[in-house]
Length: 332
Image (cartoon, rainbow, N blue to C red):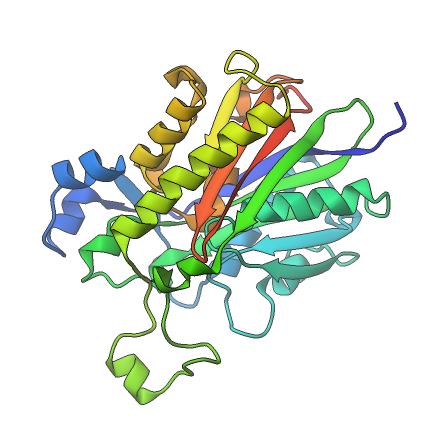
């Protein structure tokens, strides 16, 4: 077979040491463990507490973990794509700095932002570069320091988000493994329901925007939940039908880890048994761009060469979609 497909050949991850539990949040806002767990499935989340460390720190650690596990020389990396909603700075691309810091000096790099769908959209982008035949090793990193944009007096958001990073390496495959199909969508109707008001060109930073707390993430939870349930489930069902797959053909569902009820709705639409639905939301919460690669890393030991995996995500904007992937290796 001479056709090039793009396959994941290595994974890596990093989460900070500090654990913010539901019990600790009870002392910060009007909430409790039972309420958080029953509505989201989250028990704790990791927070990067050290001063002077941003998303790049998380990304570097995840990339270094991948390179060490796979015994890869960073000079072999052709391209680094940084999927993130929380770049270190508004202008200087975080991915460029990460590539230099890990020694990927032969790679070009850039950032990709599609909120919680950033990594899913990044997978499509990375695969396209590999399938073009021009690039052999594309490193895709999903990382977010969500604690940097969360208001810890707002119980509707501070219970949800955590910090973390994950990375995958895409390489050419000639066995028909790797990315098989994708269904990716967006709708600007979501602009008003999940956002940060200030800091962009529409409302530049000022004394007033800081005073009025307009630099933290806000969301209309009910509206976001409704759209997320519908669109994640719809896209996952569609990718199955388009590829003549049934619930029996699917080995694993890797869903965005935003809310257990959204994950359950997606799995139910696909008629998947619980054992095929991979979740680590109870440990990390919603790490935005990092959720999908963190799941891949945590459950890598379960994947077998040829396994059918469906990945699905939904994010602000709105952005959403599903990817059908065939796993390319057995973990050594």
